[in-house]
Length: 399
Image 1 (cartoon, one colour):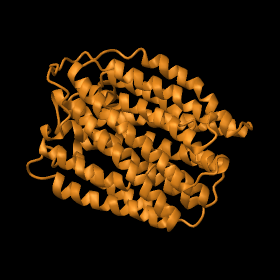
Image 2 (cartoon, helix red, strand yellow):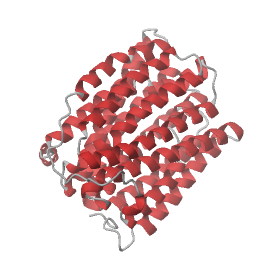
Image 3 (cartoon, helix red, strand yellow):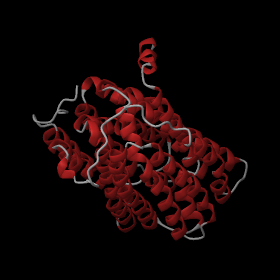
């Protein structure tokens, strides 16, 4: 424990600043996130197909902004403006869901929220990667993810308390403006990076062909995995479908987020020692198992709580390791562009992923939809270990 604390203290101040901002932002975001599928189904009378369309379109649209913001951040090295404006847009958009009277209104608010995420994601990830040494990447991204997940614990707990006090879903959405103001204040205090990477003076060069072949193989593999990685809102809708109340759904989301928060730092840091491919491949395989379990459960009993624990454990090993692998494959002045492409692929594939998932659920069954997600995860795991981890890849073993 003492050694772990010493290792964390060695991380630069920038890592902690960005982590604190993510914690505050996700406290605001996850105050309402687990309530959106309930709001759509119980208040607006919209089904899984509408949920899939909303989440898919919102995430896919934001992914285009992620690439543009990443490329422009590489050119100017002025990352503060992109990061700050992204948090402001999201913070102002989320409370407006409470004023929506149809699922189209929810779609508009989610589009604005995800646009803010598109503006900030790639510049923030690039800034984080440039702030640490290669040996600290897994730890830094894992810590950032853990603080992000801490906000995902605080937000739903606040929502559960408000539900217990008798507030309506619509009122809780409106009250989310309060933590959003704190996010905006924190975002205004982000410093410009002290690290000086040569500014790119060329034109707007977004071409993926200019990036290393191993990174391009990784993008293809990530795309396949994301095709089966639909919105987490389907997990919450599944919990409601098999008998969980609104309060229990929120608490299950808290449990999932708490597990991810506690394990993100150690599991992502494990990739610094064991290698990105080994850790990420194991996480993707475990994801397939978690999806199958959730899709096949007949009722919301103790097994569903365990399934959310398993899914939280899987999530803890995913994002930090995925982003650390990006930094391994593309270093230096193109880091913003690389993270833009990473976020673009992950975001664009969420559109067909959510549409396919929603259609399979509504037309066939939830078990078939979750089974499709598990199949994509298995295929991606095979590609990751056999194709991305080729002898020519600097991250073939990762350690």
